[in-house]
Amino acid sequence: MVLTDHPWPDVEIERRILAAAGLELHAGPIRAGTASDIEELVAKYDPVAIMTCWAEVSARAISLPSALRVVARMGVGLDNIAVEAATARGAWVVNVPDYCVEEVSDHAIALLLAHWRDVVVLDRACKRGEWNPTSAEARRVRNMTVAIIGYGRIGGASARKLARGFGCRVLVNSPSLLRDPGAGCELSPGIVVAAIAQVQEEANAIVLHLPLTSSTRHFVNAQFLAGCRHKPLLINVSRGGLVDNEALVEALDRGQLSGAALDVLEGEPAPPASVIGRADIIATPHIAFLSDASLAELRQRSSEDVVRAVRGEKPMHACNTP
Picture 1 (cartoon, rainbow, N blue to C red):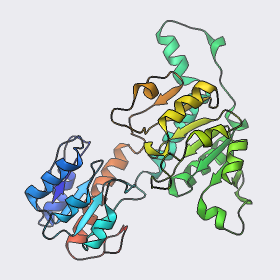
Picture 2: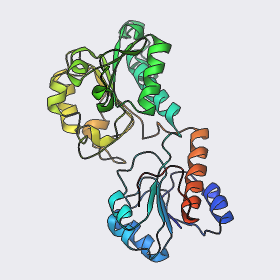
Picture 3: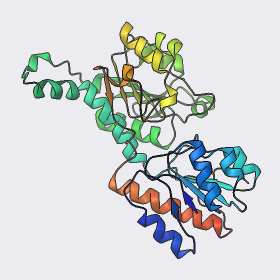
Picture 4: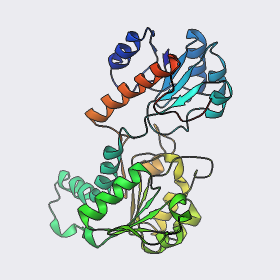
């Protein structure tokens, strides 16, 4: 089997589990290559299984192996895998949908606190020798209304922590909630279902927990940002393509946002300097998922599901029906 990329220093967890099942592991580089790089890797080894972290597994890569059984995403989102091509040729597509729920929701809240408590700005000032408490513009978190767009496992965890832990009023938005006859009533104390118009009208912060699809690409665009009334903080811990970089920069310049806190950016791992270099943007390098526990769990569970598929069993986290 082929592991396209592995942004961790070794592949011993994967190798141990796969070897016990009689599978030989061929690991690509730590940093993800291009789609054509992956196609060459797949053509070289003719694998029964492909595992990928960030690298694109194209329809051509999926067409090349003579007996492909499974394509595994070592993560949650599937936007870097040609799922339809895998389904058409009879291969499973699997992911690990819940390995980092607590980490990603924790990171979203950490970014929110870093902005509202002025942590990053004051840290930079202190390091320049500027000891000036009067420059702080910290806000009381309990007074804030936070909107969460995308209410799956991670969105639900963020809502719970913000409402119960910090006392925020939390607006949650997702198509499934809005289709429910009870939409608009409280889910639990402090959490309310809201349409996008209400999010734009009332939110002091907007947290994106959406998957990236053709319909959600550039979900945050100029039109969306122009409708925001309270200069909200924008937090993205999901996928960079959800936010139009040009529209984000223009909204910050116009004062439509109070700032942005981004763990993911369109153009990563080399996002544009016009975004990453701004003082009003806090950025981390796509590590919201990361902890010692989550990474070990991801690697183990992904490898185990590959073994199930290769043995002819139904995977635990199947994302398609081949």
